[in-house]
Image (tube, rainbow over all chains, first blue to last red):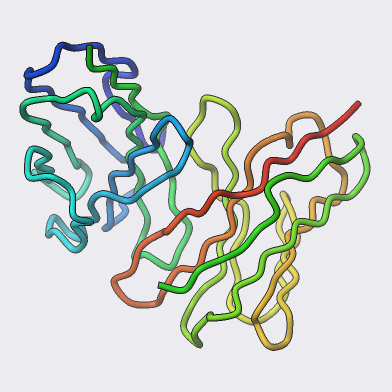
Length: 112
Length: 110
C-alpha cells in the first residue's frame, strides 16, 4: 500500500485553467503538507495542515487553495494557472512535525 | 529560521563509506536535525533524525557534534542506489516546517 499517494502524476494544462491535485495518506498522521519543487530543484513549503486546520501558509498566491476534508486528505486547487506555476508538487504527511515526514511521488504540472 | 550549510556535491566509490557534513551554527535547543534524500524523479525520502545523541538505523548513522552546531550523515557502504541529493534540515519542536536547502548531490562511482 502506498503511504502517501497523489493524483494525477502528470498534469498538462493551458494558462488560465483551474486544476486540482489530490493527496491521500493512509498512515494515520495528523499533519499534512504541500511542497513545490521548481526547475532549479528547490523544495519550498507551501502549506501545512494539522488535524484539518491550516497551520502554515508560506505567502502563496491566493490562487492556490488547499482543502482538507479529513485528516487523511489534503487537496490543492489552483485557479487561473500561470506559466510560473509549472513545477513538481509534493504532498507529505507526518505525525506532529518533528517526526519523520513521508512524501508522495509528486505531481508534475506543466502550464502551456 | 535556522539555516543549514552543506557542500554542493560529494563523490564516493561504491562500497566505501560516505561522510556528509552539515553546519547549523544557529541551531536552537529545540531543533531536531533531520536528513532526507531525493533520488531522481522521486519524492524526498526520510533517512534519519536526532536531537542530541548519535543515532543509527538501517540506512545510515547520524553523528551530532557536542555543541550541536554541526552534524555528519554517514552512509557506511555506498551503493549505486545511494546516488541522490541529501538534505540536512532543522525542524523546530513547535508548529514548524521542513525547510529544505540546496542539499548535497552524492555521486557514487562503480
